[in-house]
Structures are given as C-alpha cells and as structure tokens.
Length: 317
Image 1 (spheres, rainbow, N blue to C red):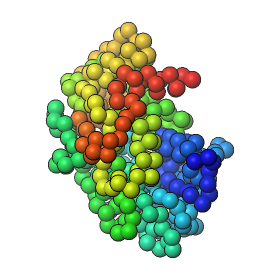
Image 2 (cartoon, one colour):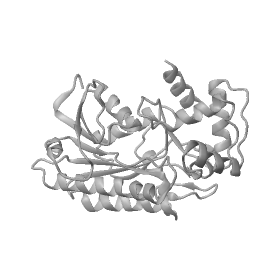
Image 3 (cartoon, rainbow, N blue to C red):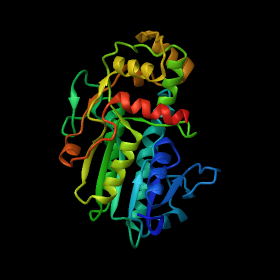
C-alpha cells in the first residue's frame, strides 16, 4: 500500500494501550487507514483517528464500522493488578461487555467488516507444569482460563456467520512501552537494572512470548489471508523457563547481578509494593502454535536473545 486509504479502514477497539498502539503504528505505516475506539483517547496528535466510546453502550462510534475492512477487538482490563473481587469483576465484564456491544454494532451495520480479529489469551490453558500446549490442548481451570473461555464464547455468539473470524491467543508481548503504561517488560527491566533480575520462584515456570513486530505482522496477515480462520496461538515457537528468560534479560542489559526472589518474597512484594498478582510471576505456561506452522507463518524474532536485544535497543533509542 502506498498511503492511508480512507476507503480501506481498520477499526481497533481498545487501541490506545501498549498492544493497540503498536498495532496502530504498524498498520498506519503500512498504508492502512486506522480508526481507534478508546475509552481514554490520547491528547497527543496522532496520525490516525480516535473516537471516544465507553465499550459498553451504543453510540455514534458505531458508524466507524461501516465499510471497514476489519474489526480488531483488544478491549479488556489489564490483568496486571491485585485480584480483588472488584478487579476480577472488571476483568471479566470489560471483555464480555465490549465484545457484546461490538457484536450489536456489527449486526446493525449496513456494510459490516468482513473480518473480525478477536484478541484472546494463552491463559486459557492454565498453568500446566512443563507441558507444551497447542491449539488443540484442553483448557485449564481457575479464574484466568474461565475469563478467557467466557470471552471467546461471547465472541462466537456475537460475530456474524458471514464474517471471517480470527482469534489470537496471545502470550507475553515484548515491546517498547510507548507511554501507555501497560508494557510488562518495562517493569521487569527496571527490576533487572536494580539488581533484582534473578530467578523468580522455582524458575521452571514457562514463559511464552512474542515480539511486538511479529504480533503486528500476524494481525496484518489475518487481515489479508483468507486462509486464516479460527483460533491461533500468538506466541514464538520457542517458549523458555522463567530462569532462562531472566538470564537473557540480564545479558541484554549487561546486568552483572541478579538477586533471586523466593516464592514468599514474590507474594509479599507483588501485593504490597508492585500492587499486582504474584501468580503472574510464579506461574506460567509453554505454548506453541501448530496452526501457524501449517500457515507457514515465519517469525522475524523466533529467539529470545534477539527479541530482547531488539526491543531494548529501540527503547533506548
């Protein structure tokens, strides 16, 4: 594409966070006309259009879907928080209600987008120790898998039969924090630079990850390739244990010291200092996509060392 074409626009719901901004930047640079639906539109001057919505009720934003090439739904409250009852309720409702109202808008559009790309999460597999999950693996138990299952069920109920559905079960996205305040890697980098980047917990919990560029490329591939349909794990082909991830992180920034954090230290610090869920660090999963292999999708960053060096280099730049 040679330049943004307003007649070929993509709507990104929840596009003002870390992942949404990355995707919007990538698609805009590739010539797509991008419209972002956001509950908190940026005050900065952006090269794409931003429309305010509450992600729960219909409004003028519905007209943005008319004639769109695709709808990309990223909406969902961050899971990087203490799991109080109120936060758990918002984690679920923000996903289900946004998907439901988008389905309403799609059903009432005279020219609805023919493609709906739905963001999901590899958390659906739970935390099976040292077992590599694929798209055909059983779903896990607990709060996180239940939320993701409800999210995907709502999507299945809301999309049009005529739409090509693409569900991306994402893993840990490695990318620059563009000021959106949601890049988990930025927090880990700070800890590593303070000398706290050692083994976390047992260290064998799986870290499945994907470079932001590969996620953006996968999103565009989903826009363009009629053969992509259904559910895909959006993760690099090389998940690694947490201890190796932290070792690679220290190496990427030249940190000589990495003090370990025991289970009780993580639980104490996560709740009282970082105000987040300790299970995000103490548990994990190994996931690999068999369906992307079938589609012959090639990752630009299949190795963790190359991915971390690239992200850190661009963050410093």
